[in-house]
Image 1 (cartoon, helix red, strand yellow):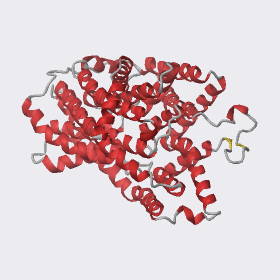
Image 2 (cartoon, one colour; image 1 turned 60 degrees about the horizontal axis):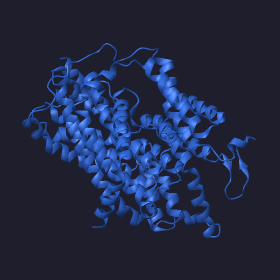
Image 3 (spheres, one colour; image 1 turned 90 degrees about the horizontal axis):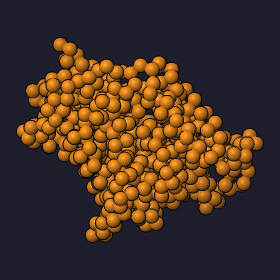
Image 4 (tube, helix red, strand yellow; image 1 turned 90 degrees about the vertical axis):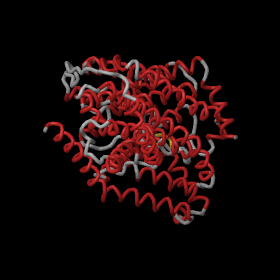
Length: 513
C-alpha cells in the first residue's frame, strides 16, 4: 500500500500542465531522434541535455523531459528498421529481420502499429517492474559500506562491455581513460590540484555534461563530416504504409509473444552491462525456437516484429532499476541520465527514495504517462515520422552542432567549456574509429570520484588494511560477479555476435531467394 500511495503522489506531481507538455515534447523529439538512423537514445538524450538545462527546468521536469526522450527514441528506432532495413540503433537490428519483409509485402503500416503496441506493453511491464523491484533493491543496498560500494562500482565497470562484447581490452582502456579524467581537479582529501596543468578552469574538475555532449553529439557530427558528405541513406526511398492496424487475429497471436519477451527483456535490462541489445536478441531467438514451427520467422512474421520490440523496450525500463536504486547505470543511455541527476545535485542510490521521493515517484509516474502518449502519437502520426527519414544529414547535423554549442554556452557561460567540448568531440570521433566504446569513458568520469572516496574511506576505517576491500561476504560476492562479468564476454561474446550477424544474413538470403 505504501508503494501505491507513493505512486499516487507521483501522479500528482507529474499531472501538471508543465510536466505533461514536457513529456509530450520529449516523446515527440525522442521518436524523431530514434527514427533517424545512427543517432539512437544515448545520442538523443545527450543532444537534448543542453535544451533541458537552458530552459531552467527543475530536477523533476528536466528528468521527465529526458526520460520521455529516452522512451521515445526506443519507440522510434523501429521506423527506419521496418521501412528502410536500416536500424536506428543496435537493439532495433532484430526488428529488421521481419519488419522489412512485412513492409516489402505491403504491410508496413501493420508492422509499425504492431511494433508500437509491443513497445507499449514492454515499457508498461518494465515500469511496473521498476516500481516493485527498485524499493527491494534499495533495502539490500542499505547494507552496503564503503568496501561494498567500491566492489559494486568495479562490477559496473567490469560488465560495461556487455555480454556480446568481443574486445574487453578496449572496454578496459575506455574505463581507465574515464577514471583518469575523473582525477582532474582538486583532490577532495588533500586539497592538492591534480592534472590541471595550471589551468584554473580545471580546478573543479571536468564538467561531465560537457564531456557527454562532446563525446556523443559532436563526435556524431565529425563522423558525418568524414563519411557521409551530405548524402542521405534514406533520400529518395519511399515505401507505401498500407493498412495501419493489424487484424485482431494477428494481434491475438502476438500477445503471448509480447508478454513473454517483456519479462525476458526486463531481466536483461536489470543486469549490468546486458542492456537492450541483449534483450532484443534473446527475445527474438527464444520466440523463434518456441513458436516458429513453420519457418516463417525472417519472412515477415508479425511475431518476429513483436518479440524484439517488446524485449528491447522492457530492457530500457529495466536499466533504470540499478541506476535509481544503486546509482549504477544498466545501459549507455542510463549512464547519460545518471550524469543529469548528478548535475542536478541529486545522488542516485539507496537514499534517493527516502530523501527525494518527489523526484523518484514523479519520474516513475511520468514514465507511465509518456508510455500512453507514445502509443497515441506513434500510430496516427506515423506518416509524419516516416517523412522525417527523408531529411538529409547535411541539414540535420548542423542543427545538432548548433544545439550543442548554444546549449553548453547557455549552461556554463564559459568559452573554455566550448573548447573542452570540441576536444571531447574529437576524442569521441577517434575512439569510434578505433571501435572503443564511449560509455565506459563517461561512466569512469561520473563514478571515478565516488569510487576513489569509497576506497579511501574503507582503507582508512580498517587502518590501512587493503584486504578490507574483499573481506566481507557481500563485497567478495560482488568481486566474484565482476570477474565473471568481465571474463564471460571473452568466451561467449564472439559466439553471440557471430550468431546475430549470421541470423541477419540468413534472413536476408531468404528474402532475396
